[in-house]
Structures are given as C-alpha cells and as structure tokens.
Image 1 (cartoon, rainbow, N blue to C red):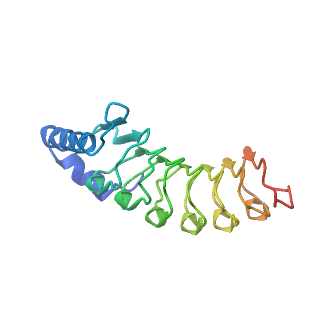
Image 2: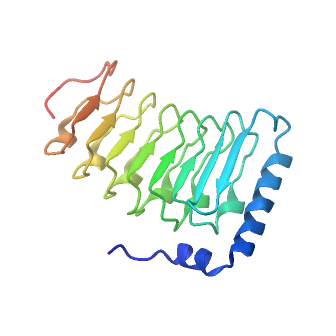
Length: 193
C-alpha cells in the first residue's frame, strides 16, 4: 500500500463544506486576476484534486494552491508560472506544464508519486532534479536539454526528446521504453537504447 500523504490527509480531514469554500475562493481569485477570464480555461475539482489552468492565464503564482494535495495539474500555455513550488509535498501523479514558463523543477525532486510529466517547450536546461523518480511518461521536447543521465534507471516507457540538444542515448540503456521520439535531435550520435 502507498504511504498516505500528509497533505492529502489534512485535506480529507476538512468537511465537504470547508473544501467547497476553499475551492470557490480559489476559483474566484483566479478569475479576478485574469483580465481575459472569458478566454481562460480554469477549473479545480476538489474531489479528484485536479487543477486545470491554461490558455494564456495571467496568473504568475499558484501559491494559493500550496495546501491542496493536487494529483493532476495542467498548466500548459501559462506564460507566467515559472516553477512548481506550489506542488511541494503534493501526491501529484500527472503534470502537463507544456509551453509554459517553467524554468526550474526543483520542487519535483523526490516526488515519488509522479508518473506522467510533460515539460515540452518550456525554458528548461537541466533535468537533474528528476533523478530517482518513478516517471513512466516524459516529454521534454523542444527544450535546450543536453544531458539524459538523470533519467538513468527510471521506469520510462514513453520518452519524447524531439528537438533537444541531446547527443547520446546511452543513459537510456536497459529502460523499458516502448516509445521514443528523438526526431530532429541534430547532435544525436548513437541510436542504441
């Protein structure tokens, strides 16, 4: 059995009314901070612990979500969110931060529940903080990433490194990969993985 997450335990200890009040307050705050709220795609589901915020959100900081044990996070195309600090100690399973302003992934370090991660088209240079995670699906395409060594030993089955600066696939040896996209990796020298 998976270890119960403390943040999730605290959330579930709240009454349904308390959780609903928090959820309503977060929704109102997000809408007020977005001048184009009619174009904004935002919802937070307090039961599945899912946050969906995309389509040119003007939000720069998601610290209001720091006490919510989010499991699914979709912040794609969020031009102002540049880190995952609001996810610290959350039992996150899936993150889609593609084409966002993410520059650092330090808060993901040690996040053992994370299985699916999409960081395509972000401003990410380094994936060292992913070392030792149990990710099975990873998209780091369209990033200036050069080194895949932090992925060594990961249970990846699906990896997209399209248009990265990766020069070798050696760190992927012995991985259970079933899908690898290395299209337009102009520096790639080897193809054994």
